[in-house]
Image (cartoon, rainbow, N blue to C red; front, side, top):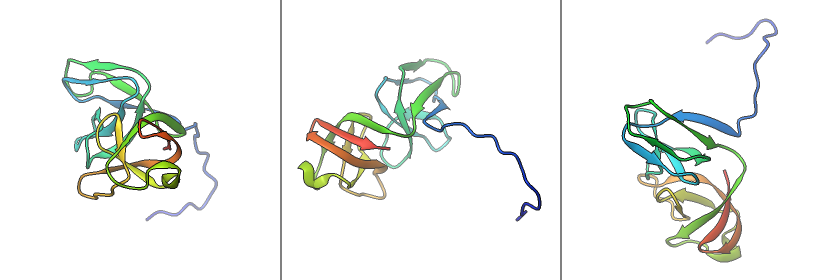
Length: 134
């Protein structure tokens, strides 16, 4: 471990958007929840993989791994998302953690082997219209 013994200038930028390389032969639609596969490439959300963010653009990578990049919103409040499964539906569920089921759907049912944490539900309109703070 190396401690600092003098001031060090650090570079800073807002982290609300991050670009990730897209896996080969993968199509990601704008508005999709995005996860990273075991090799670190972006794919439409798949349970159990690391959450990357919400795609802000459509990317159709017909080439190889990393030939194209997808821009993802990594912070902020996003919606509308679809809420499925069991859990606290309605206003009662606000503040609860939600997990990716697929590229458009979240659940409040924790399944650590299969569900990927996305953020906390901050608004409930209906089961087809919730907002999540990433």
